[in-house]
Length: 136
Image (cartoon, rainbow, N blue to C red; front, side, top):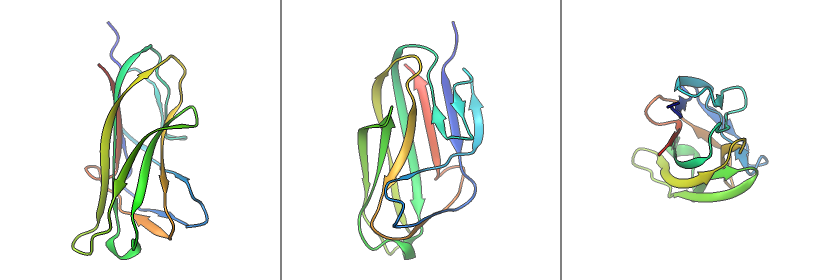
């Protein structure tokens, strides 16, 4: 039986302009991609099997660049499926992370976007700037 799971991350900071709202989040580093379904050049997951998938993402935002809530969303074929919210914190940065379980079809395009009202910086890191999916 084929395996369907990937984990990608970003070690670099991603600077996002308030004029690019919403913004596609980039995850160019691939830790593993068992089914060869993740494209790091577009940061898009395209399943090669129908099924129920667990999809997760996490971001760490520079505490000095956030003065209002931010939201991250899992998007499938351009349609928002799940919103994940983060509140600003002056004591160590804002973390936005979460998961959802979604039914996906072969060829669906899954990516992560962020909505915001100000210029922000996402801090890179393997454990705090990631995108994952796995077939359940």
